[in-house]
Image (cartoon, rainbow, N blue to C red; front, top):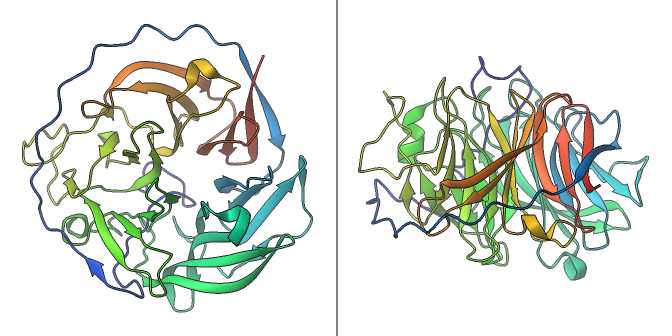
Length: 359
């Protein structure tokens, strides 16, 4: 996203350089051949649903994460609070409050719970620390709804008013993935990369550059059948994208990027948006409330406030074989989407958390 697309409050995605461990940088890898396309599926049957407010008057929620016990954790961009909703009730005391530099697209952004949360109770956050200004990834232990045992995963990450970073997600390999913007300089996307993954099980987490050439990815999710990563990316005034992300893939963002870029040395997006929509959170659905939507990709967007559903071509570059608008505005900017432990879809809007339930 850029200043023309968002107000001075959200979105951007981390740019990691100094990480507390070593980082392997991959420069200009080859795009690799694309697998053959797949036959489009039959259209999804009509699914009756409704959208309801789950948490009213929420204070700019950015990232959502569900614990196995059904509690919803979420970050507030400007307050520095990580909040918990338990049994449908917002808890009075935050899980933790961290000091944040809430300027431009900086603040408290990413959130992820460890895949082994039921046993280790680990909660990860990404935020912009004000003194000295830098972005950090830290881990806490959930102790009866409060944070204990802060552990730094990555520190001294670059910061800027634009494209500073944002999403955390665990992949099927058990690694922590961190999405990163270009921190205002397109050359960074080629020299440093945009999606990193960390082995949080090691005493000193080691980061690896997973993908390059993205401008400002603000969503990452993994296909439930194959484990392939997908990322939303914000273009300048053109070419917002959803990309099927492969190891060492280079997606072409660079100085003097041309709109509609088709340079064969870079990987192409599965879906492009023109005019731009400022894509934010994405999620694949895995539940049983909407079996018709299983393995479908959901995308939230900031500019138009839409929630979109896609069937993606996982055997090719992830292009849309089917699409539907689930929420067509009316709730303001949408910032994240996650499946809850109850099988419903939850959506972070600028002033509320919504729930999509079966009608």
